[in-house]
Length: 117
Image (cartoon, rainbow, N blue to C red):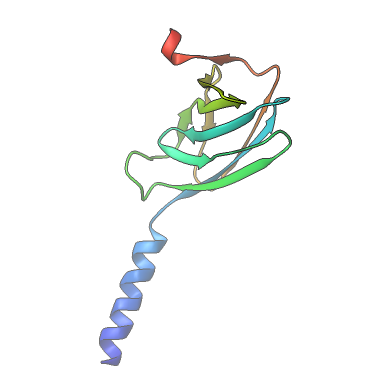
């Protein structure tokens, strides 16, 4: 019984220890709007980010379609009142395993509407 428990613990540690992770931090410094459904590549970062707020997420390559190094624009909905528009940054950001990527969205951040291209 003890041997089986130790084996299961060993396998669990191996499986958990094989993934690589990175942290992504996003700050909303756009006046009078909130950012919703924020994503980087296929990783969900957060939602309902009001002006002055920051959200952080850890992404891992143990999830489908995530591999490091990773390069992607930040995608989100910009919401003001009842108006909502899907946008992404013109800039592609890059992050590698064991790194922290900090993105600050401001009034001057270059954004595109992929639906209107």
